[in-house]
Length: 408
Image (tube, rainbow, N blue to C red; front, side, top):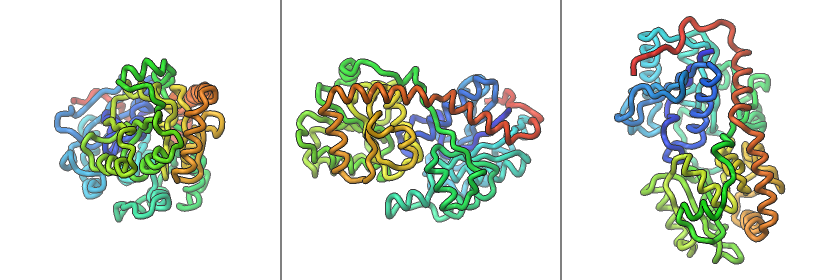
């Protein structure tokens, strides 16, 4: 099996947590590598995001990223739409030049879905898509979220025309049926995974020392800094705690001088908790492990979350999670066992759940052990088992050519 993976704006080799990057980038990287270990070739086609990057980057023997020069590298995600025809035609030219053939197209996000429709038709191969986020669900979660004018119409078209849709949770599957009238037979639930060898429990004090943190109780947030993530709710919750002096919030994500960080830092100042909030720019996965291990609890107060890989990574490290009961988060967080789910995105309920964990060492340790077990249950191997079986069921004819040694 040979897969052409289309990800117009999300590149697997860009560090997660920076602008327009996150769980999707991790998902692309880990699934591509796991497929390659099974002898299944994956070529990830994405826009060139840095002129210094080589055209071809090998992720694993048999899996590689192919950067397509389509428009200026600094083009914002919402400005990429006019470049899609150019992006598609350059992929076609590249594959024709090197004699590449694929058994299927797997697209990610609506921009890539449009490209996938064009290429799958041109190559006469099945097209599977994964949305990651949906405009209608985002607008329902947070009023005033601005989206590209073409997005909603395009998502309806993609859902109608693709052969199959891989979703991460039963909640997303039901939303597609309700909002987009997608037949249930067209969707399959295959959750992402986590590298439980890399993300594993470790000594909390040692991790804190490595990060230069003091002995305070530590609440951790990991993710992009955007309104949808609900970090403002978490800041307000920290300000409302009964005994806040020994609790510290560490926020990991975003760029150091980003406008989003400045907004959140100003909000913390207005709440009078600046001395108990630390901001850290997005870090590599190997460094992120230390933050998860150092934390007493990881909080995800998201208004909308298709899955929530940060919750799964924290769980694998043995750290309880308090998260909004939205999207795919209930697939990870088992309420009262591995952490808590909060039905309302308001500070009060988060205060209650966070304080329960921070003030009860025995409960925190018990939840941490259960969280680790949940992390072990959701591996990348298990996720790709499901993807491989599903993809093979859609493929009728082998590709004429493989993902050969194209120049890079």
